[in-house]
Length: 437
Image (cartoon, rainbow, N blue to C red; front, side, top):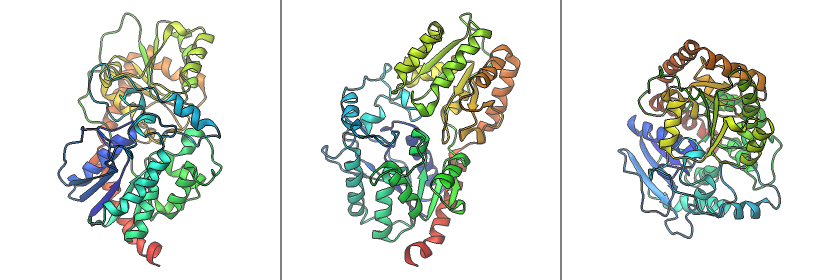
């Protein structure tokens, strides 16, 4: 099969899990013998990814004037639909340059907290204009390339995918990694030009839709009124790397509970801070480490102070990949506290480091880690009980890690690519009725 992949993030230019998924699925398709044309914005830097067998790269907008990869963005793919007047404030707030990673190494594609460039910097000063130009240029840039089906990642590439669908008369499979509803909690349709409007129009027009989890599939069916028969689940895979030992000596300073991610409403960090106060009543020597940046950071620090636990909760900010991986190896428990998480790669990374994951039941990753303890979102008492159980019973903690690691081993990008391959075939088989009928 000849597959055109439309993406926005791809290593080394990444700002979140979207980049990891695009890379993992695209290379796995090539490994399975498919011919892949990968179309992403030019990043305006001399650092380019190494060529991969079976993948042809087509960068769009090679001139610096178009390239979205520069500071000053007020809209990024991890944002919610902006409110009137917010654009100028966001643009000024994000104009300062980001500090380089302390270890000088490249950023990895897992969570926004550990990247040299934030999402707002990566996606440019005017993302809406960049998306329009990406869409226009795709038709001309791909005129000499042949492909059977279009695979587009998240809302930024949906307009280009639909333009190509009608210009080249090829079926489209749209891949949803996250929605504006996950990030903002808003289900009402947004105005024309909003993120939700782009998502809604694209998803209803596509020949096939892929969701990163059953959780996301159900949201698309419920909120965007999609036919469940048109939505395939393609789970993300585990990050590559060796497993760290889990039977580590006890830290005399106390066990560590770790969070890694953006400090936003979606990630439920306030829920974790309230749970921390309860955990510290039973485990006063425990430490909570919060790695990440976001608009809720100041509020979370103030919440910890108000609960009088500021001395046991450490806000590390954005850190390098090396420091993050070290934190995974040193943590006893990792918490994914999100109130709506389409998948969630960080618990898989933490498992490789040896931390036991605790999840909310509003995340997709629990579908592939059924042995992980779960708690409902906003239930601080329930989350605290799950954390205390692992901190006070090392044998139980080791059992959870062992069971989850066995589940983790079954997650591969090759297996995900098989599911994607089936979805692409279904898009091709139904496209005649949807495009030409």
